[in-house]
Image (cartoon, rainbow, N blue to C red; front, side):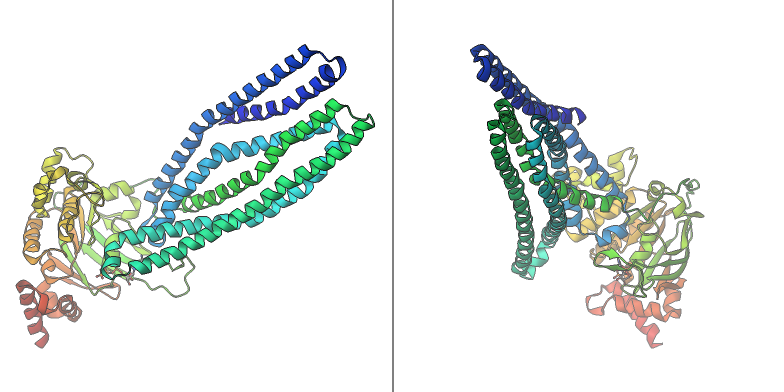
Length: 593
Ligand SMILES: Nc1ncnc2c1ncn2[C@@H]1O[C@H](COP(=O)(O)OP(=O)(O)OP(=O)(O)O)[C@@H](O)[C@H]1O
């Protein structure tokens, strides 16, 4: 980068040397002795300087491309690494489009500035300073005229900075919002089409695109104003200097050669001055882009690894004990996407949860919708950190473990299964560090999850699924995601209603197989229907942010009114299965009794 900058500087200084050769030609061979040889030699020298200048310009381009693109790649990678490290709470409040526009557009702007703007800004500044010194040396009176002309230009530069930096930032934010609009519409294309809201989405998008356009026009107008001034002022100064210079030459106080050299130098200096507006605009754009990049990169992760991580005791074949003690959790208060100090607006989602899962036990977590079941589940692998209290696995606080160790011990299957654009095999093995006989691991996990259908896909386990591949049904996706969690063979398995999209027969098959393989795996499963409860040894009832009952299904049914209420609320008899109806009949009898 430095060598590239030096070659750019050399090219610019060579351009400034040409007027000095002209001065020697005019004052020497042209005006005094009239020697043709002198003029030819001088012309040859100008040619050599020109060729050298072109060579150095080429060097600059060739040398700076590599560091410029390297900077962009490094920044992009570090941004992505940081995004992966940031807690879920960060991603809850940042839109995908804003992050995408930072990773792509903003970093592209920074690269363009690094390879061109930065170098040319330094070179132009040095050229202007050296050129002004040369003009002073040629004629101090004309140099002074030039310096006086620089005063309004510096003032204009400062004003331009104030105006431009605001619109530059606004344009970047609006580009981010626009990217979010595209992302959300593409993601929710089915809903938009099904509700016939395509036109509304288009109207919204057009409005945002127009706002961005207006900001860009504002930017261009601000730039054109300053560019006009930076172009016009030096020309006006040159005109004044010409009048004074000619009269000085006429009085014999300035040689004709010096006059020629002065104007040739001034012409060389005017170029970078005129370019200055453009370069400053690039710089302010890059500044806005850098600020936006740093805004994300400087966001500290609230979920961190401890300085000296603890290790889990060796896995017991009987399973791990999981204890939640006095667990409280509240989401941070957020206004317009920014966390704000709490002003009594946010309640605790969990307000003192005490729950122990014995080794190898399966507990079903039951509660009304919005009671915090998913939230509780996410505290175990530290997708969120508890606000108070602790979560322990085999006696070790999860916050004392390195996150890689923790997430090796704990696997999760979410209700909304996300699959990646990769083969079935890669999706299932995602959480497995050393699969050994990969195919056997995948096949067994898929079998337990009743996901044998994948073998019938066009390329079997190699079929690419996910966004860029074959689309699977909701139930099929859930089963592949469940297989992914099972393949890890975790100590602790967290299932967030993982079978909700399955028909009751398939769910029963999966449940039966899960019960077989879950021996030695401590499991917490969020249940939204009675048949999922059948998977569990015990049931825990989440009510008002606390566990208000833990016990066997039958016992709770008899003793816990809220459990009965939740079970009744889970499904209306009209769409329940026979099995569910049986359960509900049982509840009805209990309630009647
Ligand atoms: N990212 C978030 N930011 C703020 N509040 C949230 C966030 N996620 C969930 N909540 C709130 O926390 C509460 C508990 O949500 P959670 O998803 O844990 O409930 P749930 O019991 O799993 O619900 P369901 O049975 O409908 O899946 C809800 O009131 C919800 O609005």
